[in-house]
Image (cartoon, rainbow, N blue to C red):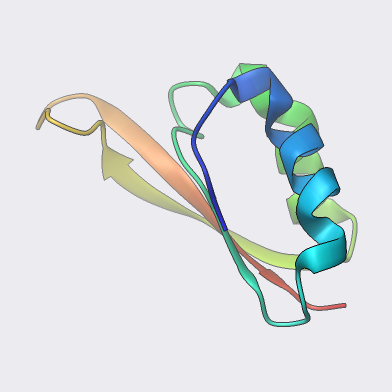
Amino acid sequence: MFIDATKEEYLGYLKRAEKYLAKGAVVIADNVGIYENQMLDFLEYVRNQGRYKSQTIETTLEFTDDVSDAIELSIRIV
């Protein structure tokens, strides 16, 4: 599942989709570097609630070489 929409709604999008996500499903959230403050609830959920193994991967903002950003790669473990 790839999430790249209204940043404050990432957690809501994930929770609505979870009933369709099997163990081992991959969730990728875009722009978690530059919009981190707008999605803290989502990041807390995937990083600390025990449902996902999650890792932040540093990137640059699309179409730029000098603006730092990140994606969150989360694998469902339950």
